[in-house]
Image: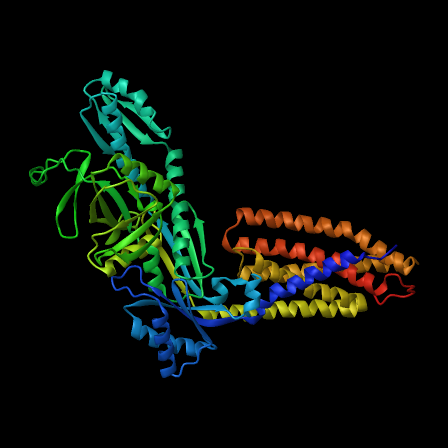
Length: 619
């Protein structure tokens, strides 16, 4: 039967449209001005977040007659929502004055949608910096540090390999390009060492130099892999740090070879965020070389496999250079008091870290192990490329005897005070950067500019839709009205789809994509309506004209939209930032417009004209 849909088809159309409306609702409610409070991670003065603090904040707001919408204690943060920005700023200034050296206080926004929408995971569409303001960072990852560190590790590995194969050498030097030079007594020893050294790593390139020397350098492919892995891991850690502090919807993405772009919509306090991102503290667990005496230390008679480090109290302790375990394997940490009421840090390792520490402690019971705290700080000077020169600061925070085999959890004791323990615990919980970073560029985008962009985008979108609706209704009458309903439904489905897709952010280019897609979406109904009019002019029955109009227009519509999708995919693959946003918005819009223009309007037409004896159409 012509122009008839089965019940299930109508149900699908209704279900899709209803779902679209529900997931669009959070974007219509807007945002609440919000303050959230977290602990410091780089200061010595630490305070806990608890119900006592919550009550104290409530009393402060009441005394200052500041109206707030809600206040709640959540994981690692206190969230205060307000009805207007005036109250938010007033509360921020007051709380900052009282808690300036105790807590970190941030200005942001949170969704104002009802709770039941959050239960079904319906969230407002995420706005980019150009729409809601915030902070923009370009972070440079110092890959030189990781390459230098690996150079030192390979020197130790080379020494161990030559010792194991009983191949004597005169000396091992560091050379340019992160390479190693080995001087042998003669060419026979040099040639004998090539095979065992080549088995250390396939990414190392070995060159014969003169009669008795070898140069070992990283291949370019190996260097690229090392730097790529370091940047990717640092990106993950920075994202984790931001999330730990309760900053919602951050954008952390790679940019070029050794840079990371971070966008924090809705955040305005740049100093505090910089502290969070630039902290480069780490832990290293090493064995104490008890064979080295005070006489050896005082006379600098230190073997090549060891080095001297300072404790908190200024004592010199000889440590083996080999790192047993680093902070990269720590997944959680917290503070508590031991049986003698002394502060301690409880550490939990991941699966790989627990295997390493378990095997090591099992084979080294009775030996002394030290916990070395490592931090990179800006020296205030810059290199030839304009990058800050970082100084490595190290100190031993704990020395203990291995009494039994350790598992995935253990504790660090001997910390001087509870504040220092909390400081260390928070640093470890935030994640240890693989290699130091520094902020190369920073910008604050004000919220007023974002509001102006939103207003302009909304105005442009509204005018575009109204113009299309007026044209369609005047030209195609009732069928134009159906097409206009489909146009509005298309906008609703676009917004709901963009709010559901993870990582999707609405920016000005995205708004341009929406407007362009809506303007082009009406073309499908123009084609359909013109086809129907042609069939009617040829004297075809009304029901047959509707059926033929949709069938003949379908191929043209699909072909045109497929070419648009292909072009948008190419833009997305080769473009960056704004171009990607425009491309993905266009792809979404084309998909939803095909559904609403072909299936949606056909469902309405079938519902109105199907199974009826119609002699004339309003078209």
